[in-house]
Length: 130
Image (cartoon, rainbow, N blue to C red; front, side, top):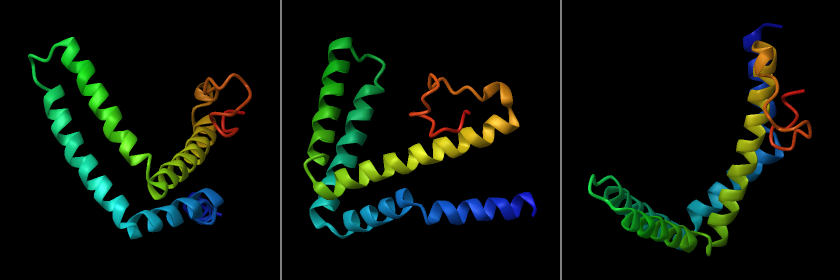
């Protein structure tokens, strides 16, 4: 079996994983939720405006803290929507899976990078460093 064939097999396994299926289902639910769409559009607009404020050269530490507070407040609005919170959680779980896969591959390509710093319990790497 070639490396490309194994990569295709891995891709299929990932596509069939609980994490990927959960993420796709959550994504579809989020897209079908009109309230979620409105919240996300408002969040993206606010994020753009807040980021522009943060990039100013004359921003003071107090203004920067106010900018952080504004971002947290805007993100908090997203967390009140069940479809969005499920999507964020599902995406996080899939990202964790992908980090573990990448760590497992990296441990064979660059063995010196095999210790991901998880402390041996592999909770953060999904077991990829061992």
